[in-house]
Image 1 (tube, rainbow, N blue to C red):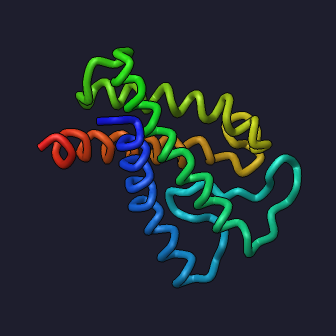
Image 2: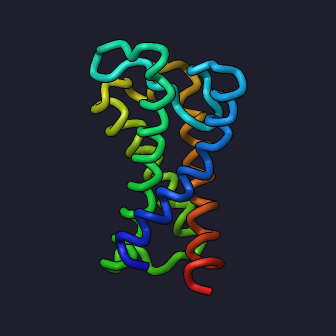
Length: 146
C-alpha cells in the first residue's frame, strides 16, 4: 500500500464512521454531543458558533482518520512496521491515540486529552481510534490486498 493509498483508506474509514454523527445531526438538528466524533467547541481559544460545531468536528475527525492511514502506510513503506497484521495496527492505534491527545489536541487549543471539550473526550477518541484500527486492518488485509 502506498502512502496516498493509506491516506485515502483512512479518509474513507473516517467518512464511514462519521455517518452516525451525520444521521444524528440531520434527525435531531443537534450540533453537539455527536456520536464517534469529538465536538469542537473552541479553536485556539475562540468559541465555535453552534451551527459550525458539526462541520468543524467532521473536519477534525477526517483529518485524524486520514493521518492515521497515511502515517501507518508510511511506516510500513519505510520498514518501521513489518506488516499490516492486526497486532501492529492495534499497537499503532494506541500510540496514535496518545500522540493525538497529548500533542495534537493541545496544539489545536482543545487541551490535554481534549478536556476543554469535555471530561469524556478521551474515551470517544479511544473508541474512534480502535475503530480506525479495525477498519484499516480489514481494508488492508481483506480489500486492498485480496
